[in-house]
Length: 331
Image (tube, rainbow, N blue to C red):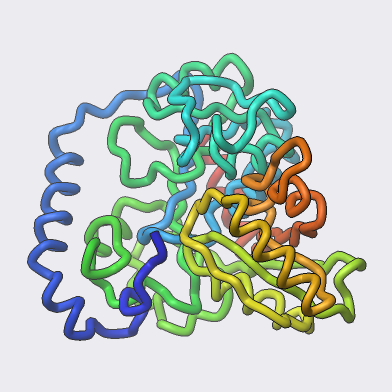
């Protein structure tokens, strides 16, 4: 689904207030699940990268950056993820070339370029399999899943929108009450300018990290009009990234998060590009879902779409503090 625009308003609007009773029930159920679920331990340390809201805050690039830090310190990180949108429930090791987004989802295919990836709906079982492929787990999402004990947890917040209107689903974007989530985290990473002053909500004893999403535009798209399309939590974030890089967007085409593209949509995008004499560009996650074979519009779209890579960069003080804390947490 496409996240409703009212979720991201600084304060709840009327429709959010009308949905607030349902959000209180949702938050209560999430809290009860946490209390009643028996927590299990894993055979290797668990580093969890989560976010307090639904939608793209920057978890995946953060998970990749953390895995890079661990690998640089001589550890053998393994990613663990649910594989949202995929048919494989796992636990299973992702194999590039064998698995596609329909089997394992889009994010695991990106993560697999950097370290082994285990997809598993059962995080405890997934962690056991991960132990045979490395010595530390970097869990992409799963912060709100109480089944698996974590050695260190990082909550990722997009500084531009913060936690939106501060309400839980369906009235707002929060997965659980904000206060409880912040207290359960070891660190809070605010990406980009802290436009909503989220730093003021971080409790004492919880580390405050700062970072930014960095990108180097592919040379092929410099100075060319673009048809930018994406199916992520907040498509406007992708469009803003392109604009901040000085790129010209001729047409913006947003889709729902984790959208599975159709032949009809592929035809429409290709027609857009032909009419505007523009290049097609999308996120790496979207491109992972575009894989197709044969003489089809989807295959043509996959071949013609230029993926736009991004990376997560910590500021120097945050990188130093995080490296030290990770070392202390996992030994």
